[in-house]
Length: 474
Image (cartoon, rainbow, N blue to C red; front, side, top):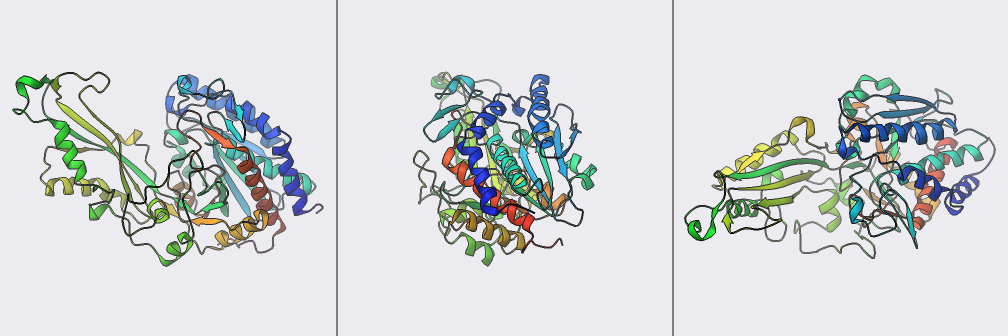
């Protein structure tokens, strides 16, 4: 094999420096793959277009064979698998990306001409999907291409790459699809990119994800509202009842008060890797409120190794236009983010039991419909796994920065498909930062971070192809 590691990294850097990354990403951002609009046929058609017009040609140019799977759930998006087998005796690396995005929120953007046309402002490149996730898998694909070009058309390992189109809608149907086609997706390790670094200048390696379970707390007392002057003090206000119930779950400083909802104890390995991790949202991100959350935990432990209960929305009456009436109903949309080892089946029963014990008998726990819960399981590859050590060493060699190792991302993704259904270790290497405004108007990616990311990925893919120290398949 010809070429060198430094040559592969230089080729990858040129992809960003020449403007090719920005041009290709602009074309991909322009496809309106809003999976939160499913089952709208137009949204599904855009997801097909993304796979057929952008992903398929790019992978075929690298010698991958392509298979597109229809989603087993009606009204959900397709999945593409690109496969390149150089030698069955070599390790196989599975990549992952999602081509779908959240709602564009077109009218609320302040940068450029809206979410579907990328706009450059200094080091920031704006557009829906730049950070989550089109930019991230575009960088990884380009890093693969750079290694192949430097190595005379070879990677030195087998590669598979999944692009799904329903992650922002809960990856519905993906587990069933993979279970029905396990041999197609089988690999030795998942190496993928999504989410933010702990700091924009520090490479980050995540070994899993927290799970998420959404549910509503509802107080529904009567039909219709009643005049607040005539009935105030005579009939119960559901807003107050629900507020008191919520205050019994989380204390005034953000501490979780329900013992059954707390995370299992942290292992020594998890504590050790988080010891030097600091949370930094960048110059425009929020600052950590040191006084909020579990008092005995450091900020990094709170977000990467603990369970957190949050209110996502609280509605009673008519917030858009308040009237002088006592409302009949109050609803809090709630979520528990939880780490591996938490018994997901016991979360809702634990909330119900707690409310009953505290006398909040008028508050009902309403789980979401099974087909639309948007929930994810919690997963983790242990920090001392050989693939974690190999990736950490390669990343530090490429960037001259000690990577942050986190046991799980603060957010959630379909990682259990890879760890539980396919039985492989998972390595997530995020290429964004915490203040990228993903899921919000003015989503963006940082160009210097993108350059650092593609250096890391090209070096990692080169090292896997070189074969020295690559973990053996279990």
